[in-house]
Length: 514
Image 1: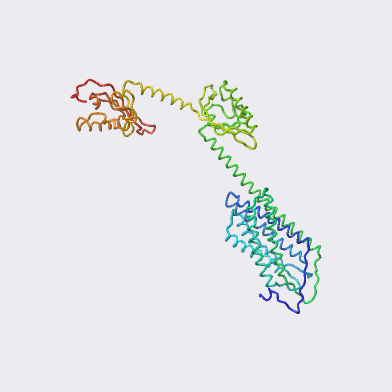
Image 2: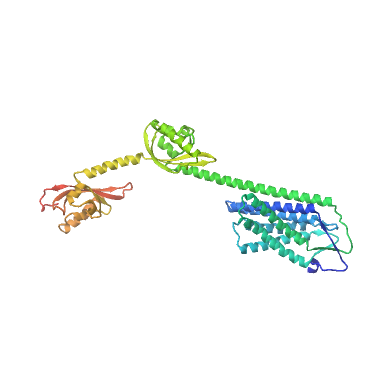
């Protein structure tokens, strides 16, 4: 078997000298360069794929494109070599020789799809790709049928394998190696990577061709004309390039659709966030016309989107602020034309106007953004009506608390003092700071054990009824005071705190029943 595969010199056999057609050699290189460029593009698609299925599709389609391209380069390279002997090809073996090339291409694409390769991955990958392409080459050569005998020089066969692995490693490294160079334009890096990768792959073929030895007992003549070889080579090149182009186009369309779906999903997600936002969101262009208006803004202003979109945002303001808004917008636009800093999250309190004419206090967070070259302004609006109303109520409550003639105490859920008003400070003799965190019951005299039990009964009654009212003797003055205690609960009926009201001393004998 090995004696039939490897060539050894013989005095009886005549070694035929072949020659290359420069045009077909150039054509084979061009096919390999184009296939390498497509492979790098498929690898880039795989790196940017948004799902495992898209990544696998990019690698599989790229493997078919590069594998068939390598095989076409190999076959055209064989046609370029004229051995002056009639050559035919066994179709099943020729078709089978494509498989090792596709397998080697799959390994190459899987590695090129990585962002980085370590030395071990590069070495093993170069070995696998080099052996795969060598297998394609020698199985393709085995498909030749001719009257002469073709064998291989053992030395050049070994050299072809070593060179094949080395050039395969170079072909894999080149994409990552060129990425380290700071080329101004990325397409030059891609073009250079495709040229070097194609040269390395075709270099494997032409190195392996040096191992070929065709022997015959006498001189033979080539039965196929150069025109036939040229037509066959051009046909293979055109079909290969068309096939590769179709795969690349299909891949590009799939990637485009995937990105479009991703953009569409992001847009839908963003629209959902805008629609679900509790704050009003309004976008205007550089002329002040409303371009976006979310449901929360509709709740705040009462205008529907159909009534607002395309209109000037001034319709949502009191008439007294129209000129002020126009001046501000014109001034900011002029600043932007003079390269002024962009507007970022400027927060202010402003007045809006409801559809029914009611003025609305709002907090406005204003920013600007660029959308496809068009400047836009985004305002996040928070209705402060409830907060302002609550602030007014709190102010009234604080006024009552501080100016009430009766002593008032706020207790937490653990019955400890949170705050006292000035009247209670006067009654108890404590200042606000000293009273904080004291047990409320500790401010009163515990005459005997029954009194302590009575406090327990008081808290139990408050828990059941929500309030209690009665007399207690205070430590500070020894007098009896009318005390009113009320439990305050939240919306879920959970105890939040207590309110105690302490009236001035009541003139009741100390020995009387409380």
